[in-house]
Length: 106
Image (cartoon, rainbow, N blue to C red; front, side, top):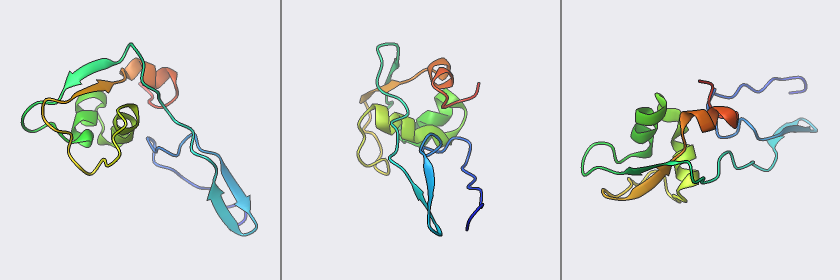
């Protein structure tokens, strides 16, 4: 495994996480929180039908479903597989902020 390059998807939540070779194993270091809540975030009210999954909301705001984990982290969603209830107000970081923090290339 020595010298093997690890390729991560472009919007992986592990993109900023250090990777180490330990003997013949490759291990991830402590995950760095990508984005914290911010007063500049958009406040989005989850509608009654359709866009209640974080991947769908990610697609609506960022053009890709892959950044669902940003929405989960910023809003302290513990189980991203459970839909966010309709009427819930969530914070959505702007595309510009994600770009400035190295999470999204716009």
